[in-house]
Length: 307
Image (cartoon, rainbow, N blue to C red):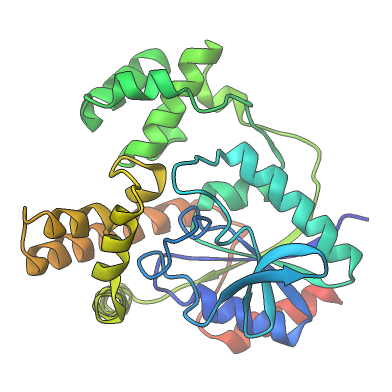
């Protein structure tokens, strides 16, 4: 019998963290983080990690504890390291098996759609490690140039890659160049490894955009600027993988005196809204997602699923 897992997806600021915690407390669950940015150590405020969380150990596993609920794959990765989708899937599946062995419910929570899909659809993903030299050579190219090169080498890439996400485009190009095969052709579904219930949080666009703006303002009030100052003092370069998280480069520009804080905040809010729109475009394509408007609706779905 395949292990049952609950996945909570949706755009940034939609309430995934709160939903995940509520479900974990209600159904003896443990959370597996599926947010690419929340995996990084030291990047806390700007990535929206749970405010009252703390790294620790739970039954022999290193986790991020939030209100007594273990969060796996959160706050563990060095800022200069990259984690491929294949890496995440391998780690997430190991966490799922550990959680199930404890007779707890694995709850996958996060907005990185490719992570969740890789687990749910059991993708066989090319194990191409990040190529430092190749990435350095591509650094000077604009996003448009990278997209043009990717499409020239792999005409089907536009159907499977977010062409507005530089990091995703670069990764797809890297895989295509080093394997000589289409990126889409290498993401083949294999035998299922989990029995999933995928719950999506939906909100009206105006409400979501308001929540995004309020979240950015709260992060500034909580000390996001000070967090970035601390990261720069640690010697974390602006081109580190973790620094590509929305907002960190803009705040670093403010710290260097290149733009005002007001301008940085405006850019962050705009970039976050654009990201949320891309997330919803991604999730809307998945007909398996059951959309809910409240935690109560989500609880009913989980209760029925577990029966």
